[in-house]
Image (cartoon, rainbow, N blue to C red; front, side, top):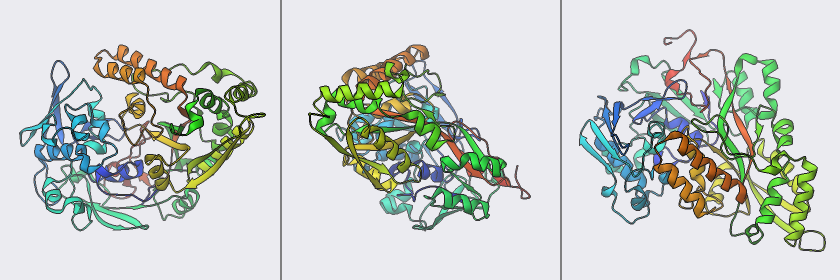
Length: 503
């Protein structure tokens, strides 16, 4: 029984965007690769793969496997799935993540037919993917939901309604059998999974748990086996009370604010800089959150593979008083403050337990420099829907790496990324540096292009990183097979219960 965060919006991998949804679907659908217990990519539906000398053609050799209804999983399922997620009619928010595939962007923009995409079934068991540019991180993305297959035979028969539990078929260790909205999603072991004999747990319930403290009580009472978050400011207390239950680890995630580029005041870089530099990140990380989070002055978190983050802005080392004095000067120069206009706007933020405290601290920091920021709280899914619709002045957001690479963060701010570039940040120099990194096979040179791009992003002050996170899980000690890792991925297929069969 898993406490899994917010309610899913869908059981379709091409129509989700939350980590809570991908966590559930990673138990039911297996891509070309999948997560190992430590979160690294290992062979999934593909037993092996090979790459051309120029890195632009990949061949994946599929294992013998079937969907849960007995229909074989073939290369055609992957061709169909990749065309489907990039088809603009699918309206997938994540489609731009796959723009490294040859022809993906024109297809997604409706400028080319889906069958022009650079994917083909060489045989039923050999999938070939042609790329626009080298993508050495492809095995990482191949385990992400954007590259998970959907059952072609069911989607062609039922359309988007294939995800109804009475129709759901999977190729993974579990198959979804029930979804009671607001209560739980129930999955059962898939006897046709290629490695079913090693799967220990027969049935999994995923409960929505938006109240971390209530979920904590349920775990301690034995009503949940684990919960996928802990309220930050209770972590130290729980480490003393039940230390063997608490799991924290460095995590590839950043919390940030996005400025709506259409809001008149935010068109002035002095205003953006003033707001950015006046936030007391140390207070938020060390006094409010208190679970090991770190102040963030760069956008890419530490620990990302093959990368050292950009140098923080010069002002990041200044005392808070000096930063806030400079912020007041910049605002006055821009015409705001005493003798000028009052700067007033809304911060739209998520309603999870610890976010309102952080937003109240930022509101106070901005009040100290003469800014009136009003807080507007929404449930998490509603907040993100508003961000995608650009219905905000300032948006509170967070991002978890989809794959262990700096591009998983920096691509968010490409001018062509779409809905997930909430503030519509656009800088052609930034875009071109990312393009150069995409074309660069040398890892060190690629990293340097990305550092230059991140430096530009930070200097433009359109995006305001605030804290780097840590994963926080509360796990009953009777659960075995749990491995803390930097991507916080813990597939249920590797977990077992003491005293039962399995590892």
